[in-house]
Length: 153
Picture 1 (tube, rainbow, N blue to C red):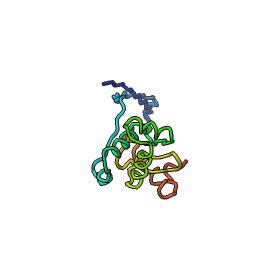
Picture 2 (tube, rainbow, N blue to C red):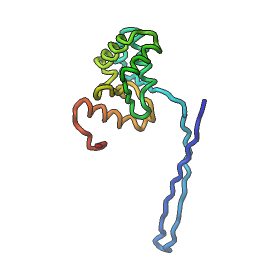
Picture 3 (tube, one colour):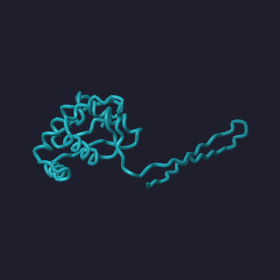
Picture 4 (cartoon, rainbow, N blue to C red):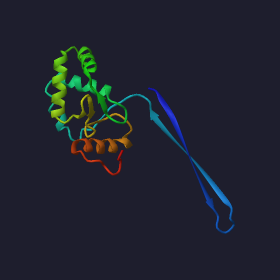
C-alpha cells in the first residue's frame, strides 16, 4: 500500500504586552494520506443502489466510479468513453447508453449538460471527505439552477 506523508507547518507570533517581546510559536502537524485511489460509498441511504436492475448496470456504474474525477465526482461520458465501457465489460454500446439513462433516472448519476455528469455524492465520493460537502452543494445547484452563495463561481 502506497502512502505519502504530508507535513504542515503552522507559525504564530505573539507580542508580550508587558515587555514588547515577540514570541514565535511553530507547530508541526503530520498527516498521512493514502495515495491509492478509492471510492467511498455512503450506505446510510442505499435506496438508490436498490434500484440497480442487473449485473451489467452495476458494472457500468463501477466503470463510471473508475472514470470519475478526484474531489469533484465529475464524469465525462462521450461516445468513445461509452464504447470503452462496453468493451471493458463485454456488452453492447447501446446497452451502456441505456444504463446511463437508467442511472440518471435512479438519481445515481446526475446530468449537468451534454456529456458532463456527476456521480451523486450522497451515495458515492472519490476524494477527500472534507471536499464532499462542496460537491453536494454544486450538485444541488445543477438540480435547482440556483448558485450557492458559499461557493459561487
